[in-house]
Length: 71
Figure 1 (cartoon, rainbow, N blue to C red):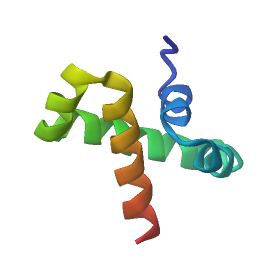
Figure 2 (figure 1 turned 135 degrees about the vertical axis):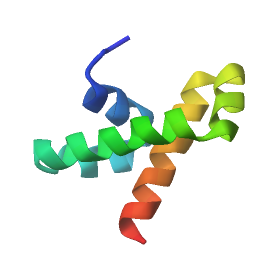
Figure 3 (figure 1 turned 90 degrees about the vertical axis):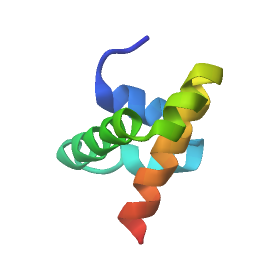
Figure 4 (figure 1 turned 45 degrees about the horizontal axis):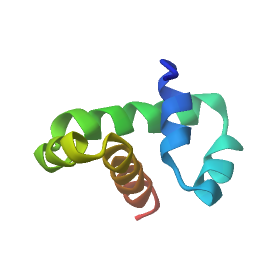
């Protein structure tokens, strides 16, 4: 498993969003990845989902971060 938060964040995204975020400057990718990690750490619902399916929890956290950014 990659340890770079940006690589992990990009892997959690669906292909369309992965391409869009991958085209952004590295600094913006790092900010999104940091927000994604905070989302994973702070949301109790994601903790429960993580026990059942870590990839699903990571994908849901990524979706939430992108939704907040475009809202």
